[in-house]
Structures are given as structure tokens and as C-alpha cells.
Length: 466
Image (cartoon, rainbow, N blue to C red):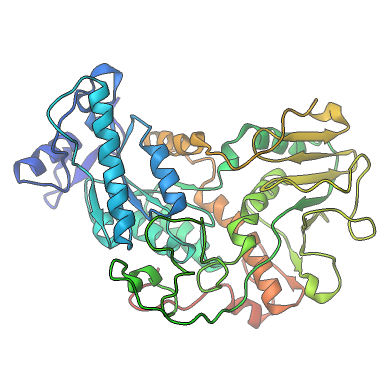
């Protein structure tokens, strides 16, 4: 079956197939497009996917999360990684070698001979990667400050996009990304992978179908945002393009706490600085906020009020939906501070990235690794296993690849990702202002509040903008 996008537009208006484009590039010495080794798998032998049917990928950002995504996509025969990009020389070279080593080993396992695969290009500047006409889709795994910029550049260049969470650094970026993705007809997946996880799918379905009655409150973990920092300047490593690392963010001198040179040790080492992230609310709680939005049927809307604990009115960050349902961010429930439902052990910690839905007729507690409990137990049946460390959810990637072929909406499309990420930003803005804020989810503004409205967007450092 021919993919809907398996063509390339030239200035002449003549449409040529990807196979023809690769042949032309090879004839012209086009190292950008064609591998140096043609393997049986590349020809579609042994049950593999032929090159004209494969989705070509470019990776932008190869930090801790980027490495994980890269390993996952390298396991899909219907996709081929042809380019990687990172401002850290070690990381882009390591990624390039990992791609070529993986494809060489796969070729050898199928009995091919003729040398090593050497068809993955490496870039420091993402603009060079998105300019390539032979790349179908981009995987954006940079820091938050780059998500909107990279995704918009890729979409305008005709690439479908997989963008890590949080989708944006500001509320306005989410609206702009949604508009661009729709205008250019791109397939977009947000890295809120619990949409593709069975335990969360079931929990959301049970809540929406009324199994626990009207939802009174939902609890999630990972409270806290970040405040300004002032780190001492350090010499910029020769192997790092610091100006490109900052990109659209305000200028700050290099400090190794912002970027761990070479092999990444942490997922988001820079999220303590508001120029680059929003702390726990955007780095971690966004997963749970997406679950809440989903379970409450709010994919096209959101809360109408957010109250920070700085006001003294609430024990923890609290959101209110138009239905009256509350969303509170806390690790544990305390009598006298929170609504502790019947059957709940106060020593229980809210599951990482999960949610506790409390309704008038019971509760459902969901988390990763198959964790799903309820009271009464009959709502979901006996719980199975305990939640462990974060696991990859490859079906989320596969959903994106399938939608690239079908041009259908993904499990967590750009508009859905924008709405869920907005919940994180609302919490940050409430903390930063220290005030209870009213929110209009239709107009996406704080009615009559100029100070809060200014925090919906940020100025970009030239020459960047969306």
C-alpha cells in the first residue's frame, strides 16, 4: 500500500516518488538522502519494509529522553532514522553512531554483507534538519524552551511531529502550535503517553461512564513550580553551541547545572529555572493533568479557576471546573485538609503520574505499570500488581506512525496536548502571582487580569519567533 505522503514536490510541480528522489540523490552524490549500504531489509526482503514504504525520521534533541525515544523508534521496521540533531557534539555523534550501529547489526542478522551502514546525518542546527526534503517526520525531544519553535519549523517544512511533554513553555505557544499544525495538515503526537496505556484508558472510561458517580475531587502528585535563579557563569565548553542551546530563551551565561555536557544523567536538569521550564508542574504533573482532563471529558476545555496555597485559602494548589469538580495537587490526603473518601488509607501516596478520582459513589486510583484500584473494589475488580518505575509506552509511538499513514488524529493530538499543558501553566502563573485567578477556557484568558494575562506568553530572543 502506498503511503498518502510518499511523494516529494519539486519546483516544476511534477510529483516524484520517494524511491525516485533517493535514486536522484544517490546519482548526485546525495549523502543527505541515501544510505551507503543497501541491505536486504531495505529492499523489503525477509518481511521487512521497503524504503518507499518507510517513514523517514529526524531527531531533534538527544538528551536522556531523546535517547529513550531513539532506541524505541529504531525498533520499528516501518520507520528509519536518517538524521539526528543536538547542540552538544558528543550527544549528536553518539546518536549517529547508535543509529548506524543498530542498522548495521540488523542487516548482519539478516545475512547481509558489504560493510557498515552509514546513512545517518548529524546536525548542530535544527534548521538544517527540517530543511531536508527527504524527511517525513520530526521527533522533538529538546528542552521546553525549544518545543514550540522546533515543532512549528518542522510543521511548516511539511513534517509530521512527535513532541515531548510539556508541549509548550507558555499558553500562547500552545494555541500557535495548534493553529500551525492544522493549517499545514500535519499529524502531531504529544508525549503524554498515558493516553496509550491500558490502565489509564480503562480508568478514564470508567470515570466518564459514571461508575463512581459525580466526580467531586481529583488528586494528583508532583506539586511545585520554580523561581528565579542566579548561577555564576562558567566557561562554555568548546563542544557545545550555547547560543543555540538557549535558542529563543533569554540570554544566560553557561552553567553546568543547565546542561550536563556529554552523556545526560538527568531528564530535565534545567527545569528549576523559569526561563527553561516550570518545575514539577510542567515536567511531571502535566502527565496527571492530562489524565484528569481526559477522565473529566475536558479535552476541549479546562478549569475555570485556580487557587494557589499562597492565598491561605486552600491546603494545596487547587483548580475548580465549571461542574464544581476540584483538582488538587498533593502527595497525601490529610483529614481536615482534604476530602478523604471512605475506604482510603491516609498513608497511601498518590501514584506518580496517576490520579485519584473521588466520586459520590466511590473512587478510582490509577497509576503506571498496570496500577488500577477502586472502592468499592467491584468497580474495577481486584487490583493487579504495584506501580514501579516509569516504563516506555511504545504503542504511543506506534499510534503516531499509524496516523502518519492514515492521516488520522493521534491519541494525544496537538489540541488535546495544548489543553492539558495549559493546566500546568495555570498552576505556575497562580503560584507566581500568589493570587486566585479566574480563567476563561474558551477565550484562553484571565478575564480583566492584565498581570496574569501577560504571563500567557514571553518575548523571544532574536531571531526566533513563531
